[in-house]
Image (cartoon, rainbow, N blue to C red; front, side):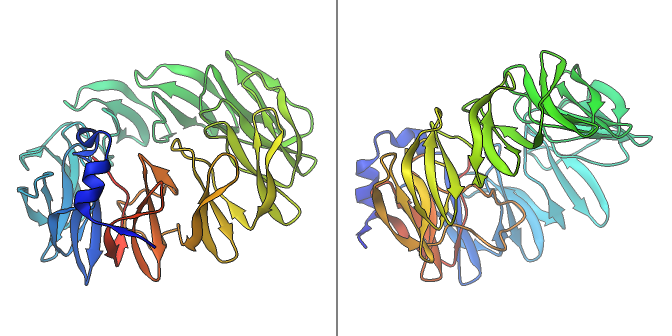
Length: 372
């Protein structure tokens, strides 16, 4: 296994500027700091704990109190809180005792709105609760939508699932109902469609109209390739946004299409199909995850994970773990390559490899994904 120096990695990066603001928290001997995507520890391992960068700031724990640093490692909000959540749109939640409140990037406490429960901002909006109903506010505390729903899930892009009187629908960031709350279950909104369940029937809501699908037992969310995997007669296939079978049910298990391929399982092994349903990588893996936009996918061979390209060739040997157990409260859960780097475990240590399998930087007791 070849180790590359940080300077070598930096020289090989096509566009260092694109990654300059991406940092990953890394920990060894119970101390946490941050490395950049060139493998350099640009913020030394000095904190008790830390969270990922979001909105240009990261939470850090010092002497049992949380504060925030910027990407240069400078403390911009002194550690003073018992708990914090990540910044978004210049706002973050903090608490001392049982009470949560909003702060800005100066650490000043904000009284944005009267709410019975505090919610973090997500892509410029936050929920608020009054009289057991949920509404929406902007970062200035202005009401986007008065409280009128029992529950709203996190926004997926510009859309969120909401619940009222035990029924589900879809709304946008202005509070407009895209799909009314008429369904017992609803999926993500994609190109004018979402899967839904009405009574005992699964189907598709297409331009506001429900189309039931005979014999369908379960549907999962649409992927970015515009297909949703679904189960019929205990077999998995894929539906398009019109509710038609793009790939007939024939697999024991399936995962989402990403970058034109999807993992499927038949018998005792996983392989990959393309969007026509053709098996393009034979059934041979104990487990398999989706492809990244870098064109590589994690596959399990024996007890360990390696990476294949879209031809099925093993380009990085199976010698790693990819799943982080006991990840901290801030950590995302994505597996595989992101922007040319993958977080992996090797001999009880965590670190990053590039798409050639070279180690970037060094190994740590723990490492989290890169964030801005």
